[in-house]
Picture 1 (cartoon, helix red, strand yellow):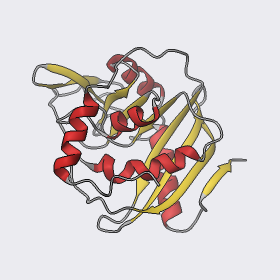
Picture 2 (cartoon, rainbow, N blue to C red):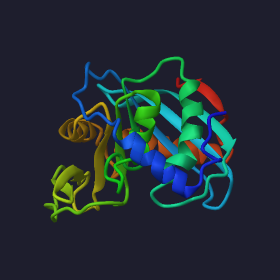
Picture 3 (cartoon, rainbow, N blue to C red):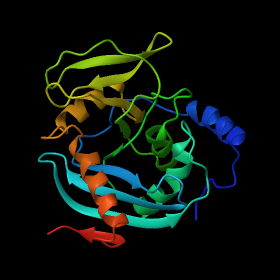
Picture 4 (cartoon, one colour):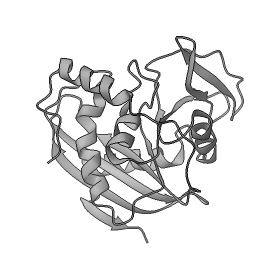
Length: 229
């Protein structure tokens, strides 16, 4: 099993710095047909993690399949290093997919990270796939206040550099924080996430993934790859 459990935080920091130089924020090479949402569920201090990837048709945002994995992880829960705890399980779920998506959206950061290596950047590099981070909380950078209406945006800036956008997905509701991970530009990442907005604060790909992994953790659905009716 692919794992980072052997790394210390010092070693993980060095690896993030090395990987960051490989990130490519280049335009998408082809139109998106299949998009994926990925998320992890676990009790904060437990070693058991539940990973899920949902496959969704980009045109109508309808899920049609999912992959679920339960595994053990020993890398500690440390802010800024969650990719080392979560990616091995997501990678297992990814490898179960008979059809890979054109792009994956991760519940977490892309380059809006002190070393530009949030989970979306990290996973995008590991699998060489276009990836976007869509986080529920800010980790790094600042943004000017948004207008209160759904669809309003404000650039996330750190050290004078634009890294992503705060995006309001419902009127008067706290925004989500969008940044490219790998193989997509900052503005394309925003465009994609706007197309993923549904009725809820959390955009559809990561909302479906979030619901699914929590159902999995509660024993309501089973591990493996499944097609939806």
